[in-house]
Image (cartoon, rainbow over all chains, first blue to last red; front, side, top):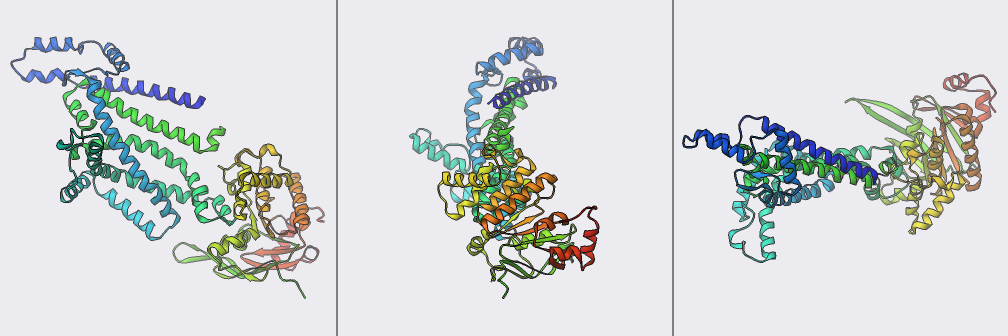
Length: 319
Length: 260
């Protein structure tokens, strides 16, 4: 429990560090949201200066950070200049959509990678192993953009929804109808995102299982006469779990960043488009909030992985 | 009439690939027989093929040629369920028990795991039998909930022997099982092994490069060199009149002092 508490404190410090770094980097870049107004000759320098002063952009960095931190603790996350409202209410619905997409894609990728990797390692040289190798090579070779476009084409030909999150006709429908529609819309982007992650997971799961199966204690376990399935699932899989669990933590963090492109291709109303626009506009607090959400994803993934490691490995518990 | 050997290797050949074309011969027409209630020691230098022979005889590796027989019954080509049924009869205790014991299992679970195949469904009953086996090996109950890496080398080796023992084997192959332990501990475990042999009518194939220890335990010694059995004699005869160069070399390398 103590180590989990320490880990939580460590995560909190990381979040603070990431927020300091992100505000520092955005402010170090030349210009700000109001800078682009200078190209409009009808807006005077005095007006721009007044606007900067009104929104607090003329304040020193520590003061700016302090305002943002106070606002973030209230759940508002600062102010969006482009949307002229608190950043929190703009971000949260989109973050939920990204979370839904990334969560489903992670689940899908792991549901395929875990059994397929175990099977490929257990039956080396078999059709399952060859299929796994082929899939890894193929998915690694296809850029995510191309894969997304192929899936879009597939969606158009099969009648699957190819963009957005919900059909206009279903926007006012009941909960179940709406959920069914969202799931149909979710399918293609989730497959695309999972396909990007799959080669990494599959190759790591297979390698970890192969390594575990080569351990002398596996040969010794087979010597008892217990079934291969039990040797595989009770002895080899737990032995291979540590790198797999660490990879799980990493995969959760990775999905956040890789979902940006997929969201753009499939018009998924997630954080991706908002974040890209905020960076282009220099919408300071929105950029920091989006970065913090990404960092939060990564930290949460690793935190969950650490807890899973603690639960799964008696040696870590003993330490 | 001689009794039928309990465990027998007949003309075993085993080669491993080295590079693309070459193969290195590890077992070259090896034949050994272990009779009920006896201890056969297999000695030889490192790399002479002893451990490969041990794995083949424990049915953990298939020889390229030749046959393994248990009580006259060929078991080399068994697979699946038939092989799993035969496996408990011959148990192997490895030299590096730290590697051969699953580091994630608690000691009691390591010993209880093989009991599943004996159809003992009740967990408490398996635990009971595991604790009984531990006590036979002089392991205190306090270590039951530890993992192998929390034990000393001697304790680990006893856990490995206890795990082999719960399967009620007829033969235990001890592959350098006492090597790496200090001398008093070797003597202690050797004494336990002799007690167990008497209590459970066990036979041992005792593999070692330590001729002194082999001679003190075994009825007969076989000497292995470059993948071949070059000599096999009762202990007294081998010590008095070694026939092969390999046996003489091993004898000459022993520090001065009487061998009993």
